Length: 328
Image (cartoon, rainbow, N blue to C red; front, side, top):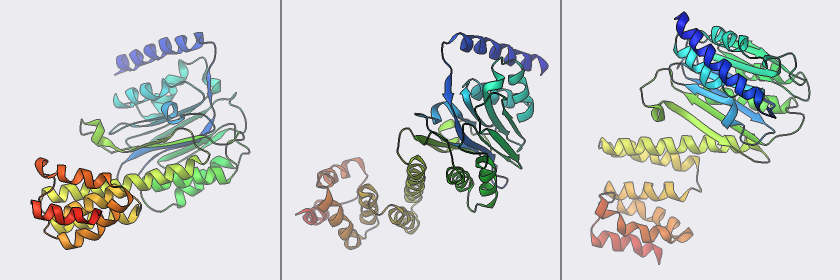
């Protein structure tokens, strides 16, 4: 194990040396939180900054391994290398200490990690631009730099601990609290949230519970919350599709209805809900939904006749004509 650890550190030293040759470091000053859900074991990181596409540099997580936030004068290598070390059996603290020991720029870094066991480690370099600091609690760490004041990270910790709901709800509560306490002294531009499962299935696309980014927006946290609601609604749509595969028609319709209620203006959800009703033999119930969708965008009426050939819609010509009459 020591050989593996030294191998990773040697790799980091090489990457760090390359970074030092770059004429400019990226000043991704921001506030973020890394955390593990003690009930589900899910792990995640959420962030906001007055910097374009903050999620592409700060947020890192892997199912069954841990989560990392790397910021301030950011070295993105802390993300993948921190995960590598934790995957190899190092705790969050051991991984962070190992990487810092090989980094000549450690004084301008701010990094936090949480591992699969809930161990937390955080570092705020002595040369991070004030106000800067972190608060490490049970299963989480909140950190910030270049803030308006020193109330930001304590507010994040308090909000995270007091929040109700799942891990995403706790992470978003922390970000909102940071902004309410003063936030980034420069303003706000982008935000991101990344959550992974407690164990790895070997299929990363299934292990990501949530992976959302707001790259550039006047109100990035409000937009991030909108996307979280939208993803949850689409998850209900996916659950409805799975119920259809299991011939659980009533279950499918419940899921589709829930999704539609969460995002009432989404035509696609209404359309596929209506299609599911037809496939369940409930054509009369589907017609008001089709009527609303067709009235707002007639392209859906053009799509409908293409569905029977793929098996997506079970309807004969008479039923199709009846539905399409709602578009006239």
